[in-house]
Image (cartoon, rainbow, N blue to C red):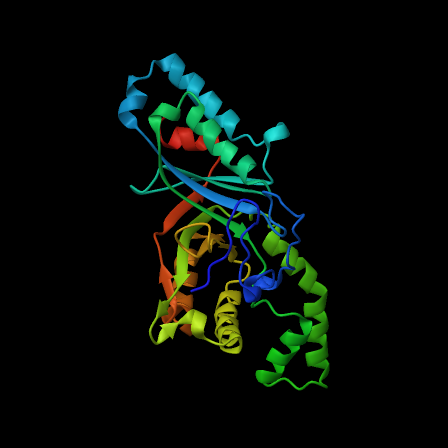
Amino acid sequence: MATADTSPSRPATPPAEARGHAHGHAPATASEVSLEPSHGWHVSHFFYRFDRDKLAAMPEAARRAGGEAFVAALANEGDTAVRRLQTWIVPGHKADFAVMLMDPSPLRVEAVHQRLMAGPLGPAMTPSWSFIGLTEVSEYLPNAEQYGERLIEEGETRDSPTFKAKVQGYAAREAGMRKARIEPDLPSWPNACFYPMNKKRKVGENWFSLPLEERTRLMAEHGRSGMKFGGRVSQLITVSVGLDDWEWGVTLWASRPDYLKEIVYTMRFDEASARYAEFGPFYTGYVASPAEILAHCSV
């Protein structure tokens, strides 16, 4: 099997079919060397537990000062602020709280974690899990022409006023939809969950051996199921292929917690999920301020 030349004088060269075109990104030139992605932001989910024995051993004054430093580390203000930061209370034994961060700079994101661990409460905190990825525009998000073809496949007539209005409306929203995927705002809903996932690579169920047309059809069906929850659930997909143990991360926010259950259950019946998806651990979250996290955990 041929291998790339990875000597220090020459950067490794990926196969021609892999260079640049993945997910619609333009190929990078040799001069574009950066920690920041060419499109999108770094995204990290950090999960922590408090060590109750170590907290109990801390003098009251030190514990109070530690709480103040904890809140300050997550204030997301000044020169060290990241583009997006959200904190969650996490029920159950997997973690006590979570921090979700987004920024073009991976080191700026990582610095928040380091400040927490280096702070006065750091010795009484245990990182329990983390997941890293990048925002992206999915290769399955259609442009206006492709959207029109899907409408025709679903029975619309190309010359009908309804068809033209739908395509024009989609074209007007397309730029905003793409931007929302690579530079997303965080919804204000209080209920959240996160889980990683893979697409199967098993004999007879290998997602990556399917032609693009078939994968697009399956993802369009999956997307229609999700759209039924518009106004109740918001979703962010981050890609972690080559960056973490799982291939994608899914973050969901909902106006009520039962909607999280309903959307995951509903979408499990889609073929893209029922036949080809594998899921990692689920982390439930309730959006809360750093001060609310400390109060909830009796710190």
